[in-house]
Image 1 (cartoon, rainbow, N blue to C red):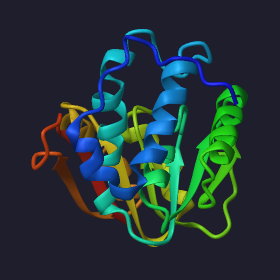
Image 2: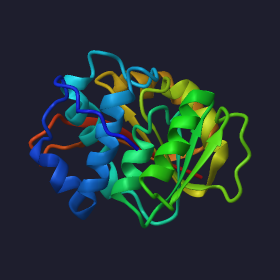
Image 3: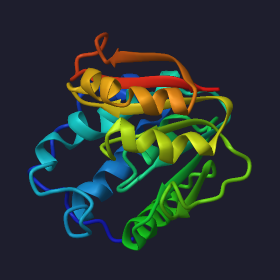
Image 4: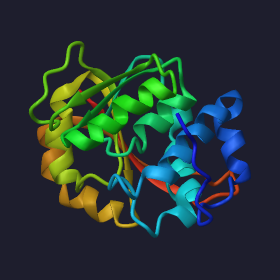
Length: 214
């Protein structure tokens, strides 16, 4: 594949990237380069995202890496592969199922799996509430998809008993948890907590909603 020059607007790689990806950093760099060159054209990232692509999207997604355990992890509404492809690059010991309803995005995900030679990724086209998975998921994540009150009912039925939800959330996560109180009870979630990740790295912190499905 012919490589065009990287866009001038692309943010320089931050030091935290090597800390998070370790010996997988070259694979991460290849993904970022392709996303930077083609992401806007394909409608995967907006034109204002390149100056913060590494920090806001790649490193931010990779902050979840230490919380993953070997097993089957679903990424709901995977889009450009944030966080699904990023996590699959960082954790080759974990099996990932990337669930995405839009055809052009699933085409991108499938292409990247091939280009990056990721043998731990399955791409499923569909909405979370419509797909049938076998086996069920040990963990599931989602980033910038929807409010907890809508997301939990879509994802909880895909989980094994004892499975764990790990959803990226913004500053208003506490209000979202309060608004989703009935949904949390209905789907028998327990050990509900809000984690702040990235405080030990020189990068932006992010909040994660974590809960276990009974």
